[in-house]
Length: 443
Ligand SMILES: *Cc1c(COP(=O)(O)O)cnc(C)c1O
Ligand code: SF4
Image 1 (tube, rainbow, N blue to C red):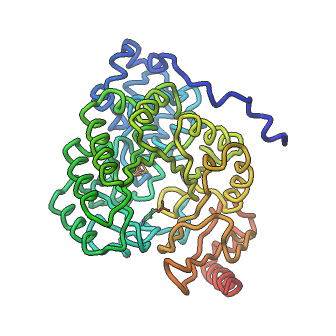
Image 2 (cartoon, helix red, strand yellow):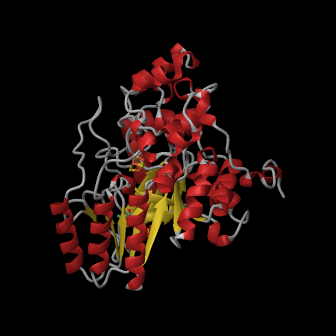
Image 3 (cartoon, helix red, strand yellow):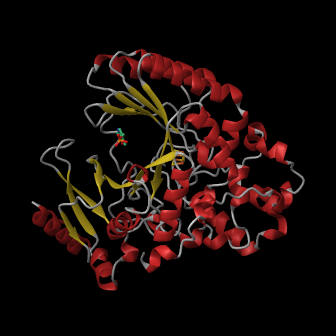
């Protein structure tokens, strides 16, 4: 074992927090375990406005930290929405460094200027969209976005251009559930027999009603060539109480799972734990319930600076998620979207973490580290670039099946480059020459 690994205590990943941690929040000191477990209580008490943060925390939050959060709202492309569960798990003694606070309540002082090559729709989902709410990039699988609302809003959201309503910085065409538009999606899928696999994302499936889950699930599963559907929800990670106490919702998920099974089709859940601090006894209880229903759950995490870009944290997260019967599926390089430069890591970090994590647990419980290529090249293994100019943070990629003949570029965050390289990036002409040179080398 290397020194790095010996820092993780052997069985640490089996210790799940089970105290009444929310009682440390002044506004919730009298909330009982029963109330906290109630999904309706969680929804009702979700934080939707920055003023609520101060009200609920009272004097526990320093004025300067509150102002930092307040100012952050003027920069971030995402609105605030946090479940009490996640809010109470934040270490309010040290909010500056807290990985959960970073994800959901950004502070102005931590933002960096956007990378010059950022794109609002970094993955070109809109370009590859044949009908509204659908992206069809790969031959046999599609991405369906039936809603653009979520139970929490993540500061690092890749779809900040549409998710969660307009903010001070951007106007968005956020949409809720719309049955007519869904029918157009089903019609498109029916006409395209190559498609076997539908990712139902958004937005978040936690925000669909039981009737909508049934409607979408049944209509997709009735299409003869659709073999697999995945419900994407961050819910298990940030709102496990819904699995435990919203029987109507969970029954709808169980229903479409059974409905699929009767046709010999897979219905699974893809969830989104980012770091070990999100995992508690509540997560375990929710997962036990899902596992007993026979539904497979996989995890997709985003590599985030100061949240999970450390070997110990990534190994712990991987082991914990595996222990809960969730299969770690992907760890994504951060997309090049606005308001996220402070979250991004270098490709080198992704490659090194992949190396460090592999071998720490079962192979099928080891995530694949991928870069979803800006411009719509699709997901590629982090080490499969054609060329990497590490000094200037420029990697060049191919996507032979998705976009044959095209080259794609991904860029490391400027702030992590040498001062000389940062200067080069500051000059538009030099910048263009560096990128052209890297592309030439990759050919
Ligand atoms: C990620 C994604 C999928 C699913 O890809 P998997 O690698 O199978 O998880 C499908 N369509 C689009 C457009 C995607 O971005
Ligand atoms: S849950 Fe997903 S879609 Fe919703 S804000 Fe977070 S990252 Fe974006």
